[in-house]
Length: 384
View (cartoon, rainbow, N blue to C red):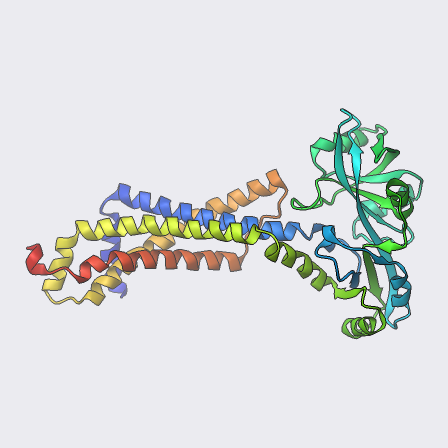
């Protein structure tokens, strides 16, 4: 088989322009497939931005909840019930709600998400939040996410310049006491605030007796699964118990199964595959047609259809390999540009590279098999 590679190479490169067009077509298909998978995985990863920063070994959540930004509340007293289980060290409440933020620069209003907790029980693995715990203990003081959209005003820039930032949320006057960098996710929150539970109550009203999540940490050496099983036995049916990983999977599964994102990007991936297959088919079919006399000569001197098929498939493999390399390089560059421009966690990995390479080879092989059908029916006597 190795001996026949030069023939396939000569066939492909006989017309340099056509060969370069073919490589460009394969590279374009590779880029399209990489970008579709990259966007899909980045959005799924972006959806758990907040989740990953929470200090918790186990999470209590309402069975009615569908996602973090679609949580139902449950009684705060379940935290006290959880503390009675051996192995549970701390139980912290987590509140989530919305408010109308007034842009202090142009006075326009925009919805913003408020994350709140008891300052005596910090729940975030973010040093900028920990450094400002004392600030949010004060009445009507909040922390502002510097990664929030610009429509909220130049809050971070003004704060860094030493300017005091005061505005209103739901008509209540508040002041920004510090900054943090988290980002709520492209699909969930345009802007975030961190607040104490009491300030959350002042801004939104209602009661603190209902919480969105219960965040549990375990004692050193405690068996997570045993504690989880005991919690599930002791707690009432208005609460589910999840591990941190289950909580992350819970959020991502919502976006995968209950939103059109997965379908949309699957269609895009299929389009990339189809476009590449059509381009490669046209190139290989033209090659077969233009060299029909040569192929007929090979058949006349005794070469079988299998030999001709292998030759065309080698051309397909060469196109796949040589087109994949520039496609991969350009895709990595586009990933970096997208990461900077859209703040999406775009990153490639070995698994994705191997998967796209496999799709590219399959795409070219399918095109080669279809293109070679003309050779099966060729009769040397008809050609000559």
